[in-house]
Length: 211
Ligand code: TYD
Image (cartoon, rainbow, N blue to C red):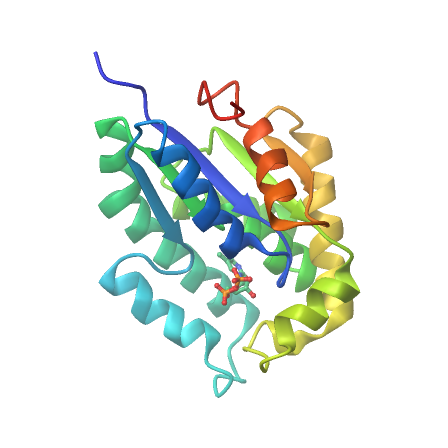
């Protein structure tokens, strides 16, 4: 019998180093002989990439918070049905850079949309799929923000530092609410040290991850 699929999501405010860590984790988990499917939200399918372009284009200044919420959910639903569910069914490790906790942190926390509404939308957008583990990379918001915007800001980053601070606070609330699934990992220090911390938080799900 093959290995059971494992669904891992990476979360954090802009500039926390998630994308670098996702690549490093992919290499380490693949070295254990697992099929690793690395994805990034919004995106990951032809339809979802088109939605991503709409969401991040700084020219779309007039986008309403409700439209934004539904576009993130639309992108997610397509990715879930087309890629995530089949991969998990094959027994792969799915490593997704952002998932519905981003919507909670950014659209409820950052934008101030009604929490209940956002949570309900998340159930629809994720087709009811819940990550097995969610790793929140936590970094001082000012450091993360400076890093994220050093090469220019996309539509979300243009919201500024106070927005990113609300995003971080929302992630910490989630970790408090769901301590088994959501783990906060210190994202400061050398890349390798952060990777080791992340792998340590996956050992129970992917035996050998910690080595
Ligand atoms: P991206 O350039 O992929 O940022 P990062 O590398 O930090 O993940 O842009 C994704 C942006 O979209 C990021 O600012 C977070 C935001 N976002 C939301 O506001 N809600 C969501 O549900 C998701 C998935 C992302």
